[in-house]
Every structure is written in structure tokens, then in C-alpha cells.
Image (cartoon, rainbow, N blue to C red; front, side):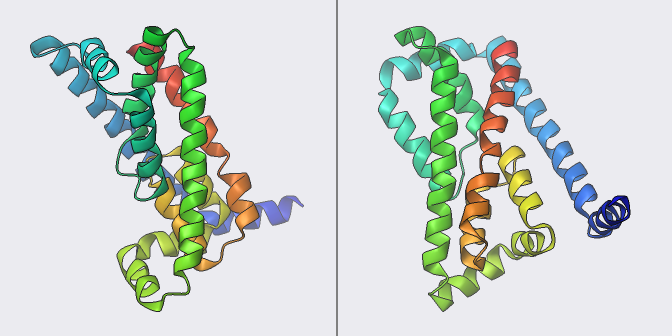
Amino acid sequence: MQRYLNLYYQYLNRSGLFQFLGKNLIKLGLVVALFFATVFLLEKFVISLKEIFSVIVDTVDAWMVFVIFTLSESFLGLLPPDFFIVWTKELGGDIGVNPWLLTFALACLSYVGGLISYVIGAKLIHVPRIHDWALKKYGELFKNLKKWGGFFVVISALLPIPFSIVLMICGLTGYPFKWAVYLGLFRFLRFGLYAIFLFTLV
């Protein structure tokens, strides 16, 4: 058993998984640093983050923000979840709902959005032109999924890699839906860990 584990570890190492993880952890660190640098500069010279989110809470209906977030998580994942997590803290205080419950709702929407992306990919597999376009545009993600399979799905759920696009590629390549369902649950871990971090510092 140990021999097989060692061989598998060597395969993952040769395939570049650990190097890929290292690069994305650095990217995560840079994203977090940029986020807090932006917050610091805004609060020092313009307006506090609390005031920004107070304005959003007062002027934008919560359901609309949730709809925008769900659409983002179901298609291209363009909007970073971090700002939405901070928003739940402000919204929770304003409407008297536990922010952790709201963050859990965001995590559910992100997870469901990823599964919607999978289904979209599974439908698009039958459209050769779109399949070829996606293969060309997201060729690197295709290769990573082929090399690392479930590991790559977990990484996309936890790190700043577009989760919805990775699950769409899973659908495009015929990756088993049940594994996308199981491994996508790591998305909840990401939201929980980020919330612990962001709620403490913001």
C-alpha cells in the first residue's frame, strides 16, 4: 500500500500539481493582500468599508445581490466571493440575521451555481463549435483536469480558480457528475475559512 502511495505521490509531483498549487497559493496571497491594501487606502483617504456596505445594504435589495452572485457563480465566476462574504456581515447586522447563516446561503448558491455550470457544459458537449471554442479558450484548464481529475476540482473549489468554469469543463469532458457533486462540497469549506478570516479582519 505504501509503495502505491509513494508512486502516486511521485506521479503528482512529476505532473506539476504541487508547483501549480504553490503558484495558486501565492496568487491567493496576492489577492488577499490587494483586497486589504484597497480596504486600507479606501478607509484612510476616501470612505470606510463599513460605510460602503451600509450604502449597498440601504440602496440595493438583498435578493438582487443574491441573484447577481448566483448568475456570476453559474457562468463565468467573474465576481470575487470575498466582497459578498464581507457584505453578509454588514447585511446580517442590519436585518438581524446571523452573518454565518447568510454566508452559508452564499456557499449554497455558489455550489449550486457550479452544478448548473456542469449541466451547461454537459449540454454544450453536443455542440462541436462551442466545444472546440471552449477547448481553445480554456485549454490549460482542460489539461489540468485531465492530469489531476478530482484533485483539480477540489483545488478550484478552494482557491481563486474559476470554480464555475472548471465544473463547466467537467461537463464538457464527461467527468462523472456524482464526483462533481461530492468534490464540489469543498466549496463550503472555502466560504467557511474565508468568512473566519474576513469577519475577523474587517
